[in-house]
Structure formats: structure tokens, C-alpha cells
Length: 387
Image 1 (spheres, rainbow, N blue to C red):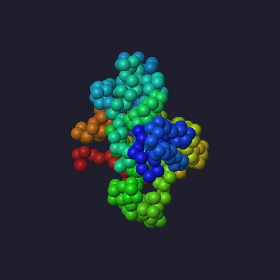
Image 2: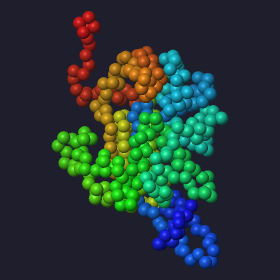
Image 3: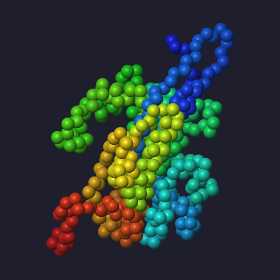
Image 4: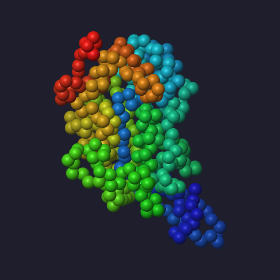
């Protein structure tokens, strides 16, 4: 794993998780080889990116007692990436859907290679998470001595590959088929923004000098477009490991906010324990995940404001969503040629009876209904004889 000798000698491989790269691996050479062996200490700062998905974006598993009641060979409650399981749920009766997606008998389906909580002795946690892979890499860099998604060095105890490290970061907790791209782009581009002094082409084309209005910022926003010098300052001497944190979307945002706030504290302590300087995280949210993030920082709920550097929201339903009402009344609309819509409609149901059996007992879903700030005239009753 050593590099070829250069002006500064052989670059020794290090383990960045061992007290911030202070432990390295040297090697023996013939006496006539006077080339020095060099240990380079990587940057100390770590700023984790934490992605919080939308409703139905977190994978859920059921309790052992509920699995037995339903006679299942596994404990999957909701895992759209596993189509062989999901398709079988399309014909469930309303009561079966209600039992399978019961907020009191479900939890986030986390990755755990020790306990392997799959409800199936023949299914390991890695097997359940086999769809979660990371192949994008870090541009031209062969190996970066940082807390990144790279295989552990040979000889490392309990050696892991890059896919297993991604799963440990929670990538398998969420609907990977929907969110893979945003996770991989953030992980790859932020941690290899520059190579050989030049900025990454994707960043230069899509991020640099782009008016914030293009991203639907406030029309009168005072934010300026990001220039290259600002980008260099932002990423210099810092690692940006991307994590995902799922939550039980059947429960209320209050409970989810408290849970994720605690997990963020644990995450920061983990990096500090490895010798890194880690004070805060950046949250990226989608839809209902934005409501969870608000609960995370709320002083009377998660109270994690001092641990959050910034929040980036994507389509947060701050005042509710009319689509939630429509689904309760009409079922989930399903374009059966689109995988995401097909799976959602198949599992929740494409009619009011099926959907209500689940969502009427799910506080998180009910909190998506339009509130008093949503506005008027959004709901109409029409006489089909006239329209």
C-alpha cells in the first residue's frame, strides 16, 4: 500500500481512525535503500453532512412479536429497495397493511453486523443492505488518508470495504434507490473538490458562479454566487463524511427530532474520540425530513441548535401538503411505470380504504396535512355532472 518514492520519500499508509492518523505502518527495506519513510498527518477538521429523508424514505422493520403474528420469514416492514419483498405486499388487506406499518411495532431498520437484526437467521445485515454500494470514488486520488469510504488497509482488525463503511454511515437506513445520487455526489465532490490545483468539473459547471435564485432562493436574497476562492476556503483542511439518518416516519416529528438530535451528538463524539476536531454538522433534508430537522434544533424538542452549522431544505412542507389530504381520500396516485410511485402505491394502497388503514394511525403522516397557514381555496368539491 506504499506509494512510489518521490522527493519526500515513501508515503506511509496510516489509519485515520486511530487518533487522527497518528498511527502509521512502516516497512523494512534493504540497507542500500536510504529513501526515508514519511508519515503525513491528514487534516484534523471534520464537518459531517447528515441527510434526513422524506416520509417513506426511511426503511422500517417490525418487532419480533409482530413478525410472528404475520407469519413472516423476515422482519421487513417497509424497504422499497428490496422489491422481491415489497411486491408481495401489494395485495395485502387493509388490516395486514395496518399491522405491518404500525408505529408502535416498528423501528428504523439499522445496519448491524453483530446482532444482524433481520428476523431471518439466514439473512445477514450485509445481505439485507447489498443494494448499498459506493463506487464513485474521489476523482483522481488513489487514496486519501481521511475518514472516507475506502477499504481498510490489509491487516486491519475487522477489515471493512467501502460499501460496508457506507452502510455504517446509515446509507442503508434510507430508500437508497431514491437518494443514492445525492449521497454519492456530496461524498465524492466535497472531499475531492480540487485535484492538481483545479476545481472539479461538476462543481465548476453546476455550483460555481451560479445565481442562488436558480435554486429557488428568495428573489431579493442578499446571497452572492459562490466563487472559487470561497470554495477553496470552505473545503481547505476539512473532511466532509456524508451520513444518513432515518427515522420512524409513522411516529411524530417531535419524537423523530429528539432521536436524531441524540444521534448527532453521538456522531460528533465519535469523531472527537478518533482525535478529529468536530463541533457541528450540516443537515440536508427532503420533504418531511425538513420538519424533523426543525424539531432537532427546537430548544424544547431536540435542542441541538449548537451542533448544527446549517440546514439545506428540499421541498419542506412547512405549512402542510395538499397531497397528503388527497392520498387519505383517494389513495396513492400511482404511475405504474415509475418504480418509486409504483412501490408507494402498491404498499400503502391505491384507494382510500388501504391508505387510511395505515396513515390514520401514523402521527407523522397526519402532521403533513395542511394547517391553518396553508391558505384558502385549495380544496374544491365539484359536481361531476357539470365538470
